[in-house]
Figure 1 (cartoon, helix red, strand yellow):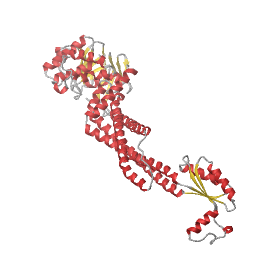
Figure 2 (tube, chains in turn orange, green; figure 1 turned 30 degrees about the vertical axis):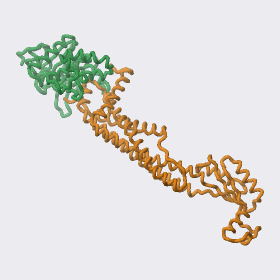
Figure 3 (tube, rainbow over the protein chains, first blue to last red; figure 1 turned 90 degrees about the vertical axis):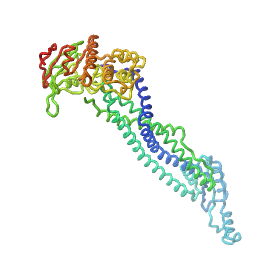
Figure 4 (tube, helix red, strand yellow; figure 1 turned 180 degrees about the vertical axis):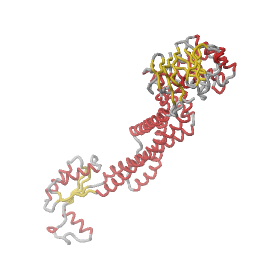
Length: 312
Length: 226
């Protein structure tokens, strides 16, 4: 029996895609608009959470520049050995600044702080304080992972007694990011199912509403795949337009949030501007929304079309 | 063109629609299927278009067995059969041209190929100049002619008509049968299920008479038999 050639098949695909877009605009326009709105919200909410995770992570990385590492050396370390070690650290490309506090300087500072004269509390040879080095990490050691590596490197020196990094701050911010990431994933999964169900419902309804037309098409020799195309492209259009709307909504929500976020960062003396979707993320979200809607539209249309047969 | 070989059809409820019937419609023939309601006329047409499967026997279409036709091949079989019903089954939201062009679009033809074929067909059914109207703007007889145009536009091997004049007045019915006769004279094989004896008498052709799923006569029409 006669089957379609590749070129004619491509032509009919293009024609059906146009028809599907027309059908969205012309037939049950309000229903189409509602479907697109629901898909948009399903994309916008996890999209917004994702943007928050992204911005908090970026902010946390930027704030790490403000943090110092305090290195305490063993009591037996001589002043000369402290300076040699400090010079070694200064040469390290991951370190931007090194400040040495010898134990006698530390003691003097401590005595001044409590209002005593030098040598009043402890004699010089009884000084219990260790030598300390304050290390400021460089620009290429901003993330927690890089800072941890730097701490490990410093700790490997024999003179080092202990190293302190403000890990609490990282732990707290990372816990917050983890919660936000989980929330983003969880909400994303739930709303992804809502997107699928919206498309299934929309497409199935349209197939049922066009049952008479589908019967006629089957009567004149249309294959289920041919009939399905219109609905598949309709699903893709819903997904594409909904995805576009969702990205716009998430960006709008981010813009509104950034007004308060800026106030907060300024209050803490940080200079940070929130970032929206990158071009890659934009394309990914649009493709994700379009393709998942296309796949689920094909699935629901095929099921609904298979049930329709011409009955005279 | 169409061959039924000892074909029986029994529905799931146990009702027998056809009982071991055999007949052969040759290429270029015009044949009437006649009989009372429930005699099996529609079942025969539905079997030819694979809307029904036979319970026993063999059915051949254009020398190919369609008894065990696969689901995937059914649309391609239907493209070879033009089908006309009592109701024209038109798409009410599409113009006459779009309705008639449907089988050609499904076959993947380009607009350049479709337009002349559709106009040529509309001319054949005397609907020239009405291509841009919607079915709602046409009379019942004209709608039926659109149905005929859609059935013949892709030059099918056989035209199957199931009570095509059931809703039409005698004048329009005669017009439709006259059109069938003309198409048959052009070489189209036509199988018409009807119980309108006066029309069969007027446009006399080979007539297969059915009763309770059996063929009781097959030959030239003879009014005395009725």
